[in-house]
Length: 227
Image 1: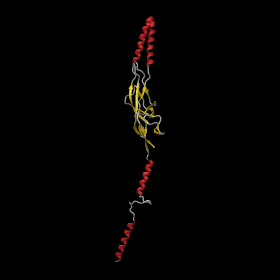
Image 2: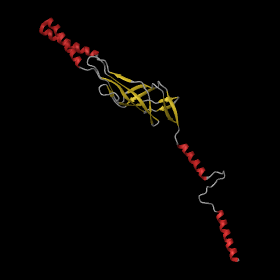
Image 3: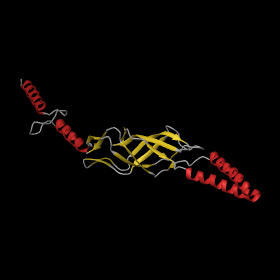
Image 4: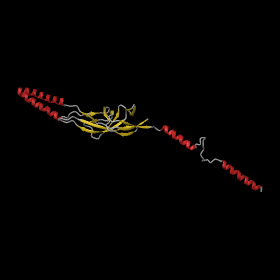
C-alpha cells in the first residue's frame, strides 16, 4: 500500500515540473504584448528604411541647354555616319535649384552627316546628335538638336592662287614677247592657277577632345534624382 502511494506521488511531481517548464522554441512576450520575433522584424525594417536611398522623378523640359565637352574627335574626312560620339556636361543642369544632372555626366550620341570639302565648290561639314545621358547610375534616352561644324571658305585663297599664276605668266610673256607676249602669258598663267585650284580640295573641319559644344533638348526627359 505504501509503495503504491509513493509511485502516485512521484508521478504527480513529474507532471507538475513538466507543466511549468517553458518550451525552448516558444516566443517570449514583452510588457506591451509584442512577441520577440515581431519586435526584431520591426527593428530590421526601420534600419533598412533609414539606410536605403530615396529617389524622386524630375522632368527636364524641352529647350534646356546642355553645355558639353567633347571626349571623342570628329572630322569631315575622318568620321563616318553612325560613328559613336561621347561628351560630358561642362555645367550641371538644375531644376528649381536642385541639381538633376551633375557636371561630368556622360552624354552619348552618333555622327549624323559627313561631307568632305569639294575641289570646285562645297565646304566640308560634320554633324552629330546626342541621344542618351547617364543619370542616377542608369542610361536615359534623350532627344537633342543636331550640332554641325562647317569648314572655312577658301574663295579668297583660290582667287589669290589664280591671280599669282596670271601675274607670273604675264611677267614671263613680257620678257619673251613684249606686250603681246604679256597678255598671252597672263592667260596661260591664269589657266595654270585655275588648274591648281581645281586639283586641290578645300579645308576640312575637325573637332578634337576638349572642344566646347552646346546643344538643346528637343523633348522633355524624366530622370531619377536621389534625395
